[in-house]
Each structure stands twice: as C-alpha cells, then as structure tokens.
Length: 157
Image 1 (cartoon, rainbow, N blue to C red):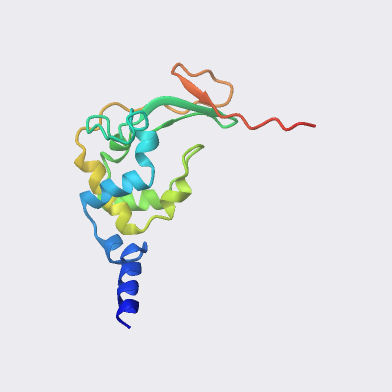
Image 2: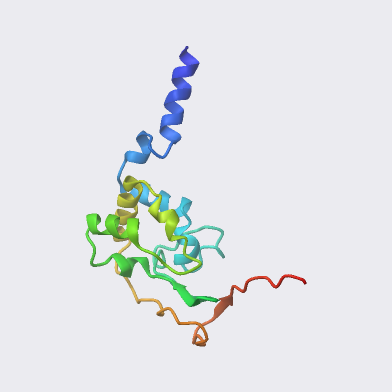
C-alpha cells in the first residue's frame, strides 16, 4: 500500500497537471525554455555550446533564415516580442498565435497555462530586448542573411 502512495505522488509531480507544473516562477520558466526547445532556435550559440545559455544572447533570436516553399522565416527575438505584453496578454497570445515553419506553434498552444506564465516571467527577467530579427520573406525573395534551405525530398519515380 505504501508503494502505491509513493508511485501516485511521484506521477502527480511528473505529470503536466501535477503539483510542480502548477508552480509559476522564473526558475520554472527557465526550465520550460530549455525542455520545450525555445533556446534551440531563439538563442544564438546555444546548440554550438552544447546547451550553455549565454544570458546576453538568451532568446534574442537568430538572424539565420529557414527557407522553404513558405518563403524565408527567422527565429524571433522573444524578448522583443513580449516587451509590451503583460502576463495575461502573453498567455492569450501564446494560446492562439500561428507561425510559418519551422516554428511548431501548436506545441506552444499545448503548454499548460502555468508553463506559459513561467515562460513569460523568465523572458521578462532576461533584460533589455535587443534588436528585432529580420522580417519573414515571401517565396522567391532572396534573403540578405545566411539561410538554410528546407526543401521537400524529391522522390524517385
């Protein structure tokens, strides 16, 4: 019986709706940013450093384009994106925005509200927003920055 109680308590803590997931804090937001992959695209040098976060660059975006049939997109400067939002506005935005590839906006929509509130607090704690990233370009327009081509595979006949 005691083992069942321990397992139930541990699974509540590990689940998205568990006790820990309800905590709203900057520390939780920092964890959400790592485990949700925010830094993977929105923090310059994060991948190259093996996951070390440079506080100066954290979530300021990366001017590397992602080009495909949709045009060319850039990982936004999240500090700049939220600079004029309050916490409730950020949650509403995060639950409803859409974006072109490769941004998996639907993953953000699935986040528990406590994670979004924590992420907001973390982003705001990082300091000055810095410069905005380049605007998305339509298909056929050549970027003025480095870019990665994400072409669909050509299937053999």
